[in-house]
Image (cartoon, rainbow, N blue to C red; front, top):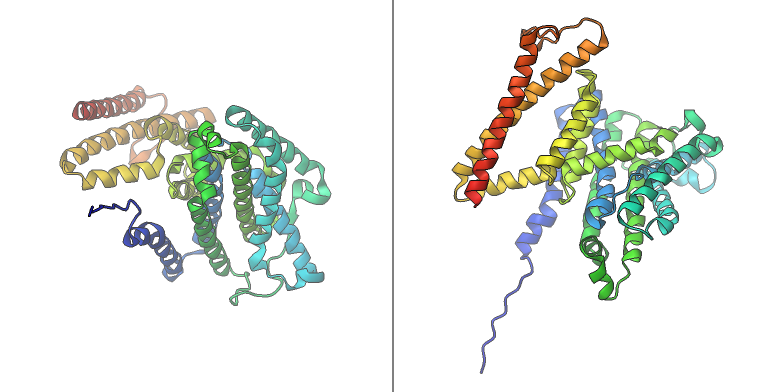
Length: 420
């Protein structure tokens, strides 16, 4: 009699609950608790924008992070889904046919259908290529559709766009969608639904096959699957979820203009996904929170906020290619490590150096912007007057950048010595 030892590599039930169920329960709890703090209208508006961008960024990461498709035109599906929802909203307002019984609360489903249909039509020729050709095709399509948005005014409304009234049709859960706090519940519900649906998609055989196509399309073809068809199907789903976000935006803003189809929002969603971390499912959500906050609030403090956004993207690409999610995971692993004291000390020195360099860069940018504007305004952080014609200003800025860079470099050398 021979005893056989079988070892299961599958995750246990507790691990499945901790990694696949618990995060969404926490997310639902956070969304439910936020209104109890009594947010202002401004905070509600910011939270609604963050929810929309979360779904939009996650849909983009289905292409870039999961299937390895770099797209410069993902806003096309966001915009077309939003336009489909906006026209449906006008039909609900007119009360014609079956639309009179369709609730505004369900308009993101119309956006999903519109985005998926656009993905099916545009993806058929686009997904015949991968890599740089796919990226260039997506850029061309974005310019083409954005130009068409200004030409076909009966469909896109021209420069004024298409507007509607969300307070029509049957109510769902007693929400009239008039007050902004009721719109918050609408956005929160669809953000949770969209996030769960996209996570579930990553667990399907098609989602797993997309990762295989990203890593090694030749091997996928060798085992009998068509990489082009896999890319095409993922492209359709990514377009559908982008359209879902567009439907959420249509209800939230009650207007859609052709600018939403252009390459600018397509570039912004790329930044959200990459800054957050395309290798992690939650990474684009972190990027959406940070960049939406910067877009909404940082512009109130400085007119150079776009420069800071570009610098942030460059720093992430150069020093943290796994994004914010990768940094958080590394910190968590460092805390759990046996030599956590040495690791955390090295990271503290690295963070201190990065902070000094950041302060030097901020001084340089703010003084230069005020000097170039020609109004004679002096940059005065914490009461210190830093005039552009004072050599001490530039010595201080360049000195902080140099000192911070030296500390970061020495911390990196310590890490290499420790790992060798």
